[in-house]
Amino acid sequence: MFKKNLSPKIVSHLKKAPEKKHINDLIRYHCVSVRLNNFELSKLNTLRGNRAKGEWLRMASLQKLPTIVPTVNIDTWKTLGEINQKLNRIGLHIDSKSEDSKLTHTELFAVKRLIKELRQNLLNTDIWIKTDEGNAEDQKG
Image (cartoon, rainbow, N blue to C red):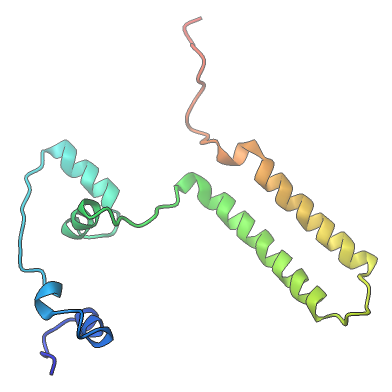
């Protein structure tokens, strides 16, 4: 039924909805070339990351580029992820307690501490500022 040289992605598309998909709708027959100057090629190479040039250009033209988390936010993302894991563990612990069991002072203290830490990290203005941007004031004096 399926040709052996088809990619697994195409085969899976055809198996999911064979009445809606046709093999000719999935195979890319058309080729488009583009000429770039040095600046444009450099910018393309920077933007595409680890993707092939053609793949990135196709995705960009179809407005299907993947979401990119800016590098300035990665440390913040990690910190908030760690806090989230701690809150989830406490939530699981609280959920596992019996209905008539009250929270201990230690449990309440842990929840309050994590909420305070989360709030500080969310409100801390330094985490959103790029440190190498320099001073925005006029330096001419």
